[in-house]
Length: 112
Image (cartoon, rainbow, N blue to C red; front, side):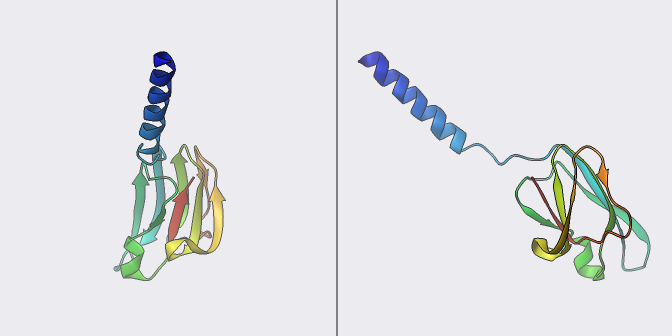
């Protein structure tokens, strides 16, 4: 009976600890191109972005423009959106090198 109680207690502890684990992050980099307020071409990006959270491309709030030419060098699929807060039309880029041309415009993204 004691062994059974110990096994149940250990199982409960393991379950509790797994529920408290930090959110998974995609491993790698995600980059994109955009124009700053002066019109100069810049490169922005994320390193090890959190999975499952919408990420706005903050540089674009000031410029009012969109980013383009995304490249996904993370280990997760990324879905990019044409508007902030993961709204609007979307396109999915595969992990490990998925990319698109300058015709694909984006303002936010979410990693799986």
